[in-house]
Image (cartoon, rainbow, N blue to C red):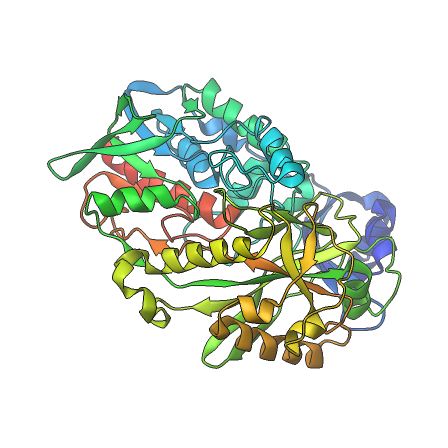
Length: 518
């Protein structure tokens, strides 16, 4: 017999397996000896009262044991070299597409401009400590994509295109902790995710797939309206049955390549703003009503949304116990993002605080047609960089000073390693962004006590929330609307927004290709 129950308990009780077993036995009216196993289906936190509780959904096995889980990675079979699909990008969309193709024995050949996940570390250190930006290896480019070294958050609202459980299970089978299967907001951490990504690479290679790093795709081979291959590093020609574009939201050269080849693109809504950093203790107090927080509670997070002057203003990529990092992908630009390690034990909490931008808002950029949002994004990144001294040090302002359009005389402590300096962000950023942010931040402060604080810094610029371009595809076939066998996929194509949704999109596209090739 299996009983499904919900238990609300203290954080300390939730952290103790014996206490969870005793609570389950009491609710099921059985002795602990009669229970063979207790598994967690979901774990979340209810912080509405002054004493936060952990809510556990449990499956209680009485007189039987849980069924053994099938190993999803073992569904792959040895690739047939006669059937090849070329994948541009080794991020979650590319890797999960590759593993899905291997279920049908189709050989995936992946090309990524960046380096493998371990070699990337040296380039991340260079941008952090020396302000040196490698345009092919950075926080956005390289094995695992942008998510590898920017937090590894795994929650998504995109659940209709595939099995979220399968995505998470594959991560676990490659070394991720099992708690991602049941936590309400699963997270691996930038210190743990690289090993998971490396294990996924080994699976793809062990079943006959190929992965080529430092391999920049410079051109597409298109014959009679059909994608048949790619040109790599300006010389090497590779042919296949189909081409998947899984290049991520920052691969501007791919958008420019498609535009030069007169392949249809569309300007896409996106969002821009700043990264907001508080002391983590302040966010803990705001959410949990306690300071310091209970040792068994995770670092508190938040999610903010407002509608200001007909546009959304919202928090993005919230990183409790995290760090702000420099995520420019070319010299002469300044971009920041957030990350956190598995333990989320930094003394800081940060989140993007961004304003939605529609293509029609950018009338001054109309001459750039489908790339107008990208050019706006690019121009602002360069403008923010130009304010500084040529390094990756970022302009910053205390939250209260920003809202009051006042230059900060000093700044609060920060996690941002390249450093911050006082600057009038309210003058540097466009009025359409500044005004909405000022109103929204004040509203959030009214709603959440302690949020609006002079202890918080605004650090600019947060601009890579999503792709500013969409590569349009047919809904049924998954192919580009004009080019046969060209499959736009993931964040860069405008069809995903995070690790999990990109992985789901990669799986879905691979299934459509499998339907044609088998």
